[in-house]
Length: 146
Image 1 (cartoon, one colour):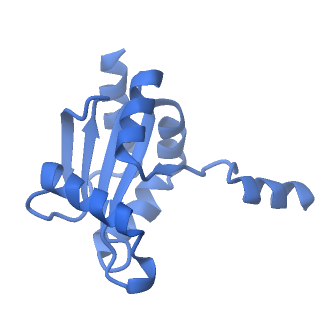
Image 2 (tube, rainbow, N blue to C red):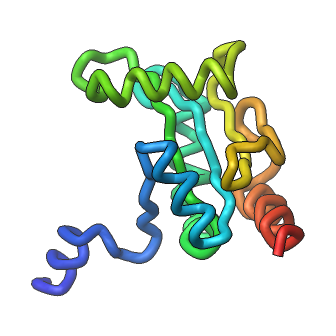
């Protein structure tokens, strides 16, 4: 029991993924590790497809395994409930990211980027295929770069 508690506190249980909130840091890390960036625009407390995507796709074991080894994850969240809104700096950064990558305000919108921020692939809405197939598509894109 103590071991489980320790893992929970450290956030390193299998299937746990870390979302970067600083896009510039994500680009730097992606460059250092030769990894791609997966940028997700989400409305975490109001967008039904966004909630499904986080639950069924981003928490899927096949995705978490791939992300751990190949991706830097960035979530640009646009919640509506006051209690869920980030710091003013976070809100500003998310708005700046939307100006560059999501001018139409689509939710969810997921992009695969290189370490310079160049768009390699875009997914509008929740993927039509199952999480495992969607993850395989991302893996193929990652593998093609190596």
